[in-house]
Image (cartoon, rainbow, N blue to C red; front, top):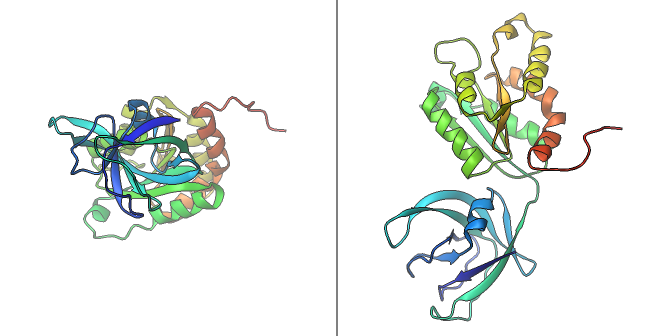
Length: 266
């Protein structure tokens, strides 16, 4: 439970957004002042509950200037219900918030120069979301398309895992040996630990379909507490490889986030 304070006299309107901040903001910015621990701990898609009322949904964590013109990490949330305040700015409204997680969060990153320029439709990204959602309850999912640039991918993966705190991040594309295939090298720069069992399982499944799978350099592992998996770029290969590791994803995420239950399967 986190004690937060709202200094505005404006009522909260369902569908609008506001910031959760660790320092009070100016009155013209709709915000709720919260402990820094809440700012750091929230993950994208989390529901923040007040007196059994789902009040906010976490949309993103961003850097934002406060009144002192210093950027701080804030949480952008969607207001889920109309909420009326009965207070003055001098006497802020107290909100005791708790974090509720209903399902998992998924980010899908498509690596494609043509896709980034709008010259090719992304079919693998939506397929990944569908396949995951069929096996794993999702509270939030979002797709990203970027060109095959190592620095762009490195920055994005770090943000998705360490700032937004996604549970699962899946990339598609860039796992071969072409001059623009930079996904595996970039993964090596940001992974905290590698999970070779995922890569081996996907490779074995692919080799049973085509000998061309031998050139795959896909990796999997953890960045912080986020599970990150590289998949090939084609929809057919995506389905073949993802279906092999899907049964292990929930268990891996739960363990990475501190689940103390035994790993043995009866």
